[in-house]
Length: 485
Image (cartoon, rainbow, N blue to C red; front, side, top):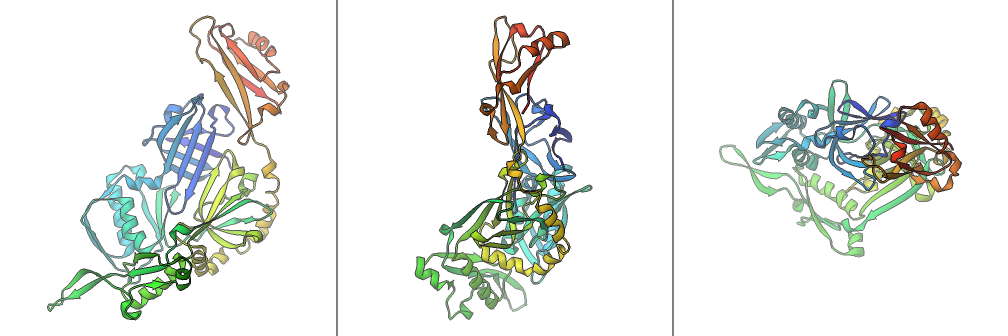
């Protein structure tokens, strides 16, 4: 089984087999359309709490040899028990640290992407740099012309000048030589795991956002250019419309939706569309999507990789086959987001669907690449079926951890002082201390004197909490509780 570990600036911060490096939470939220995040919590007794410097330290999470998160802490907080929690953002957020100066560019779409990254790399440290990877987003003419008179954050510049006009996703790949940043029209990776009702699907939530419904759309294309007598072209502020191919009307509508909820208007710009006929075709398809609202499905699943199966996790940015006949789910969908708690995998969720896009559109997009995707998993069916049986029963499997709760002071300075120590036992995230017999608990003291420590241990068994006084600490001592279940 591949072990999950956390490193801070290259040094081990968490390992599941080292009790001194225990943590209480490690939840990664992956989002195909935004920056991934990590919520990390550690108890007050962790030896390296001060090692995490927000905005400076590099935090890396690995499962086996795979990097599942790299980024930095944004903030730090503590609770009543002095446990520390950090909210972290992935390395994609490094693109928010640099500024793109005013520019004028004419050339290929990939060229502009590489230009933005080169400017970014010049202004940041080595750790924050990216190499342009795959660019599968295309332009009809393979030629774009953009300019800006403002200073723009790099991530915002990529979104405005590339993603808003040509679509696509940003995806980071980790290699031995550094981080590669891909700009993809669609994802091609398929999870070998299936999500199936009655097997590893434990809950389904289907959401449709009707507040985003639109029934009438005004489409606008590229800016119109005019040519003077000398043959010089000048770009105007006027844009291509569909009036010339739509009986003089500059809009399209979904008539059934208008009858249902009335006229709700919106406008969208396609900077790369120069022909009214193409703009009309795109806008008809788009208004049909917008009229239905935005639908997404959140699935609570058991990840087979948590059963010990030699199989990669399900991740956002993958296509996953999902089958749940009672909910009308049957097909291969893009995993848009995933929430994974590496200490409590029974509550993992994935979301299929996409922000601002309907499932019907998503399915159509998938069908374009279906043949290629099918080829990637030929021959894998037997492996998947063999591993599928290992999932059964994981929800009932037990993973225990203990928390030491202290009421009082951790350092005695005067005689007569005392503190109460209580051992809390959790199964996943559920407190089961009250369900255990007191005989399961055995307290231990480490003071450097083995003989007196053994006597102390013998008198502190069979109790869930103890009172430690100055008489128990002659010079320096540590205490812990051993629980037998």
